[in-house]
Length: 436
Image 1 (cartoon, one colour):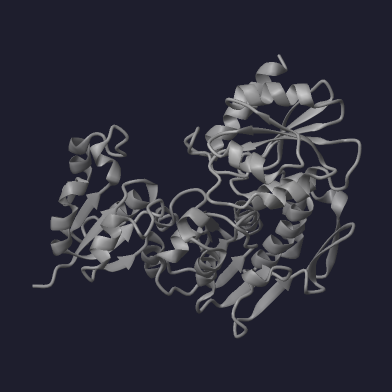
Image 2 (tube, rainbow, N blue to C red; image 1 turned 180 degrees about the vertical axis):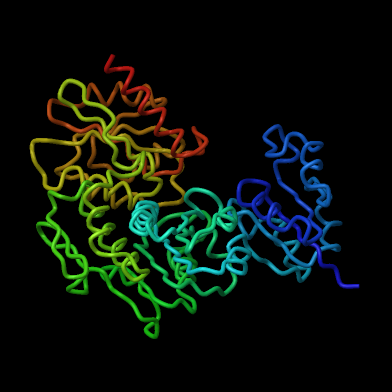
C-alpha cells in the first residue's frame, strides 16, 4: 500500500502551523535538526503528544527510516533545500510542498502575494491597512503563518513571501502578485543573483494581475500577465515633490514615511490595494497617516543635537543604501555616522563605498564580517566595536551637532542576536540609556 503520511521538517512557527492544519487528516511525522540540542523548539514532548496524539516526533538520526512511511515532505523556510536530510527525502521520490501550498489549496478568497528584497513588509502592511475595511487578513513571512489566517473569517488575504518560501512552493495562482525590487541578498543560500531572482519571480506564475517596479527589470512579470509598472505608468509614479496614485497627486510633505524608497513603496501599495478594490481616498488616508514599522529608519532618540535612527531591519546591503540615501538625500555639512556589520551572506560590499561618499562621516563596524566590510570600503574612516553598546559609544564620539547616527547593519543578525528585532531593541535600549 502506498504511504500517505506527511513528514514536517522544522518545528518552528510555519512547521507547527502545518501540523495544526493537517492533524487528524494525515499521518504526521515531525523532525527538527534542533531536537538533539538544548535549543529544541519542542522541549516537552509529553505536552506535544497531548495536543497532537496522532502525530509522531523523531530525531534526525531516525529521519531515514521515516521516509518510507510518507509521501509528502514539508520543509521549514529556514532550512536550505540542499540540506542533507532534504536531499535524502527528495532522492526517494517524496513530493515537496510548502505551508503556502497548503494555504492556497484551502483558501476560498482572493490572495495577494508580495515579495521583494527590500520594502516588502512595509508594502504588505500598507496594503492590509488600505484594505482593512474590506476585511483582508495579513500574514505569511510577516505576522502569523499563512495557515493561521484560514479560520479568521477574512474576505481576502495579503501575504508577504520570502524567497525561501517561494522556492519551495508549487505552481499556485495569486490573484495579485507583486515584486517590489530585487537586489543582492541571501547569496549564501541562492548562490547567485540570477537564482535568487528566479525564486522571487515564481510569485508571478499564473497570477491574475501584477504590480511591479518599472525601474527594476528583474522584477518584471511575464508579458502575458496584465500589470502596472510603477514609475513607468503616468497614473502610478513617484515625482519630484510627491507621488501620483491613480492619477491623483499627493504632496511629499503629506507622506509620513521618509525617503525616496518609501515614496515608491506607498505608490506600489496603493496600486496593489486599488486593484483589489480599495478606494483611492482610503489609500491616500493611509499614506498620510502611516508612520512605519519598528526598526525601519525609526528615530529612537536625539542627544546633543544628534539624531539616532534604528534601521535594524536592513539585513542586506540594498536596504542599508536606501536608508543612507533617504536620511541624507544630498551631500552636505550634515553627515551620517553609520553603524553596520553582522553576517554578510556573501555580499559584495563595494557599492557601500560609493554610497557613503559625501554622506557618511565614519563607519562603526561590528559582528562577524566587520573586517570583510572594512576591506570593501577603503575610502571610509572605519572604527571597529565589540558590540552594540561599544558601537553606540564610539558613534557618539564621531558625530557632531546635526549629524545622524544610523544603525543600518546591511547584514543578518544571527552572529550576535536572535533576529533583527532583538538587535534593534538592543540598539534602542543603549540610546535610551544615554539620554537619561
